[in-house]
Length: 328
Image 1 (cartoon, rainbow, N blue to C red):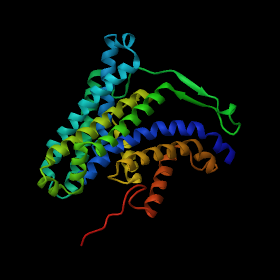
Image 2: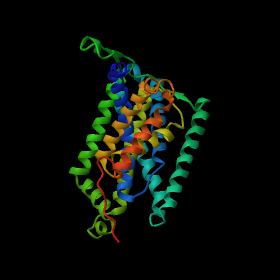
Image 3: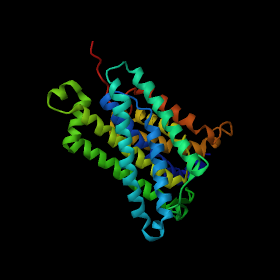
Image 4: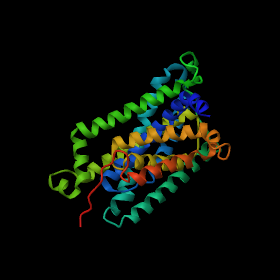
């Protein structure tokens, strides 16, 4: 049994990293907002979903006017990523301004309920528009990267099975890593990043030190939503088919990844996303074998959340989080 599990490792790592990078970048939006406002923005999963639909719509329009045959696929993807990131960033800023800012000093439960309401609102708006334009809310976009590469793992060692890599896997992985590293540098090396860290540490003191708190929070929502929307495009490119409800389960898992790594910790969100993606794919490939057929691949979510519960039992602050002393 152990030998059969080891044989699947190359494909598990490839698929797990693909899914894990998606979780990681979405988790960044959760952890950025929580770090500054201590608000769980449950609408962030729907920002990701909206980005997937906006990106797919732009691709369909560009395909209709002949850009796909005239422009290299990578240039097309970069264009769509930038346009989608700007649009979803502006949507995120609008949501913060209209729905969250008036409730900033309200009890924490009220903004949380508002976030859930915004989530349902975005789902229904996107579903309505998709059905109006396409006649169906399940949408399949044009394929930009269809090539596959077979990795001959068996030629290196008979222990492993061969694995296949789609060209889109490399694109998704590299783009997501660039976004994560870029965000980390922005937060830790720039003036606005310093302002974000100051507001996260003590909002009132930061405002006394001439930091424009409202602008910092708006920029935080813009960046988090832009990253989420761009990740939606990467998801659509990798998996092809999208619907208005993909943001719910993916958003929930990305939030889980943020908690696993340490909510409020940017590098923790990255690590948590990658770990969750690999664990989920490992369970999907091997759970039937490990349980003697009692549980199938459909129980992969249970496996991933069980790992999360175990981690939080022994390290409640998450893998990279730091314990916070409670003032009394």
